[in-house]
Image (tube, rainbow, N blue to C red; front, side, top):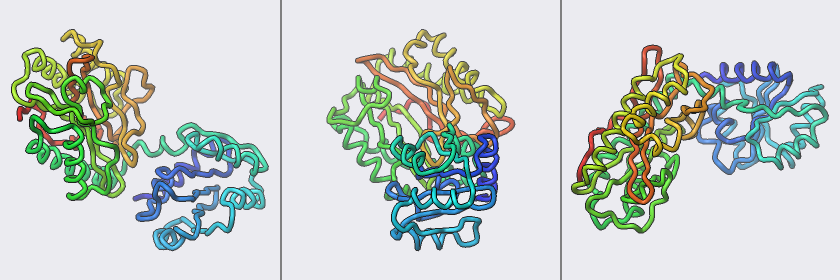
Length: 362
């Protein structure tokens, strides 16, 4: 991972914000900036403190040994806090003469308020302080996401042998999670969605005790994590014979998925990618049932920039990794979603998900 370039990119953002120092304290952004392996978890008490001339990582005694080892050979200097992390950091920055400080907009308000009280100068909250830098992925990041997507593909193949009438959604979701954890996923980047029959009309349905019935469409939305990086995919499967109406719905969503993929390439406005899929569903009379954006970025988090939707202000860039996931949701009847994960390149995209997309009947 090119840590030096990440720090340089943050410093350029600091210049734009007229800030001579920055504190980054959300776990995912710290992991990105440092590229530390085996250090930063969700419960860590730590902060990355970056100035024009230094890059320092502060944490407590629980993490200091791991952080010191991970920082070997990098620009990061590791410091152990004594009592209060942000009091000590603000005192240090004051002693060095810093009068302007940038913070992430994603920090909790209480943390922002406390730092603002402790820092003797201007505190500027920067929207997407690090998240913008994270959009374009390095080759190693894409390699890790490719590995995560391969684990999910194997999970899908496995779960086809589990899906059956009488199984509950919760049972299927649990088996899917167990399989991927047993086969290399570090953890689940999000709770798997298994939504059957009328429950599938809810895009983010929570798997429950509903038993799968013959004639159901079942939406399976899940991902794996490898080397800290996520994958995300959705497939919709038929259990037994489904109605002609549901088959037509599926075929329309698949056509929309393919149209969205065909629009993906570096320089393409995200609104145009969204529109390519949305127009297909409109021609099939299903436009009103597509109720969310076409996709989103994926990386260390399963939802990152850029967004691909009707109101997106982004254009795709080479190195973006995004989902293409049109869906149709008819309340109380059924739902269909087909989602692929792709890495954007100059001429189009590299497909990271390889599970079949024709309607599978189990």
